[in-house]
Image 1 (spheres, helix red, strand yellow):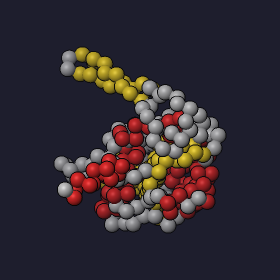
Image 2: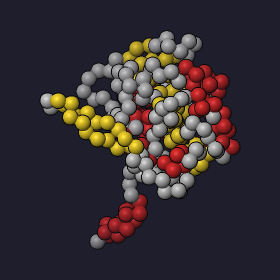
Image 3: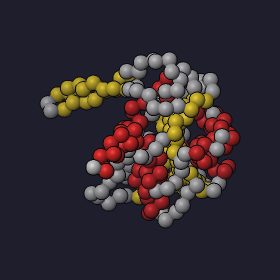
Length: 241
């Protein structure tokens, strides 16, 4: 099997070497990560300038590259640029949760959406910004859960969030807002956005936000289909007029 690992925290992310080592027990690993942090870049790609691609020796024994662009472009280079196929794309482990409405902004999630566009199964993995150790310790359990329940046979892309102290696993759906921002005047014409937590606990562990805040590993099936099917079914009769 061949695996592509990317992230939005850059090639310098401290979790890349242990993650790549863990994945390598299951097959060939190629790491392609952004040259610089790309948090909040969502599914963006670069169309207006050439991409700098450099080989990296950061992870001994594992083929690795840096791409001076977004996580989505890292996936595109790995598939299209290197003319390679992969059994799975792993995006992460992100330093910071990607839950609720914030998934729309996530470069970590953007990479798995790009993988899906290219026909490759993918998982986005994120954790509390305080410590990667707990997330790494739960990878075997998460993999066993995926295999035992044939999750990738049921859906091709998932968003996984791992709290510091896990009580177990929950299959979830997208919750509401978790982060928001305030704009602070920095002088002159400059403003800086500063994040703040706006989570409201609804007590519903079917929501990824609530499940993670209650100590559960959230595994949420994703889709790249942006069609609101309920409204489409309601309005499709208009096509017969």
